[in-house]
Amino acid sequence: MNKDTQGAAGKVTANQVLACEHLGKTYRDVGASLTILDDVNLRLGAGDTVAIVGESGSGKSTLLHLLAGLEQPTHGEVFHGSTSLTNLSEAARSELRNQHLGFVYQFHHLLAEFSAQENVAMPLLIRGDSRKQAMAAAAAVLSLVGLSKRLDHRPSQLSGGERQRAAIARALVAKPNALLADEPTGNLDAKTAEATWEVLETANAELGVGLLIVTHARPLAERLGRVFELNAGVLIDV
Image 1: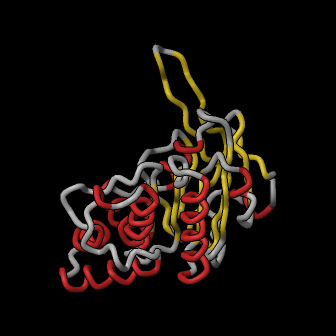
Image 2: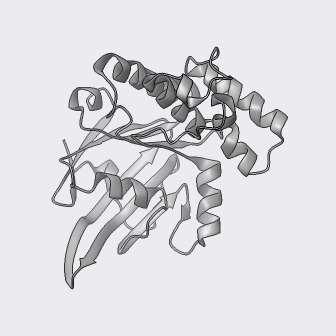
Image 3: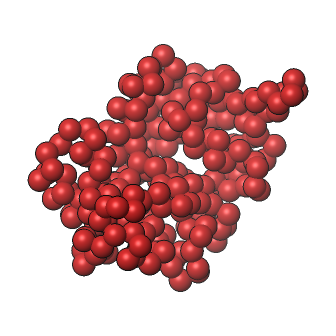
């Protein structure tokens, strides 16, 4: 494992936007313990691009959920910048996610009754921005992902690739410093997957957002700055 991925718990590097130290997750099922993650260490710096690969069930999605504060670890610590999530309330974690973290799922999870622009504006409306400000920001980021002519289209009127690009725009609209993507091209054909990947690379290049992407597509993963594999709960630098 690279030295860059390790460090004593609580150490924070100057350009760190997201990190975990000695992270572990164990579930109990019918009295038995099942360890999903074991002593995982990872740092994502500003503008970094990192891919995590691994077999189904290896814990990739669990790791992303822990890093996003959507689940609590059994042991270890997660940092957003210099802030540890350990003692934050759920409300504080939600606020931190809204302000500093974007998340893209394999399925777009767009709201069917709203337009693309309204869907993308939603995180800003939730945090209290005016509708005018939120809609203007949504239009700008939809233009960045190539959907400037689809602002008024509802999800049912968009192609699969367009829906995923709208989901990426929604994750970017609050100008996060890190974007986590869980199999963002898993449901797309090869051509659409390539176009979606290019959108993520554009976000990294133009917005400076750090990318942490879980994917089964190794050829795509190898285009990123670093590639790690989750195997038996352990993160390995490949």
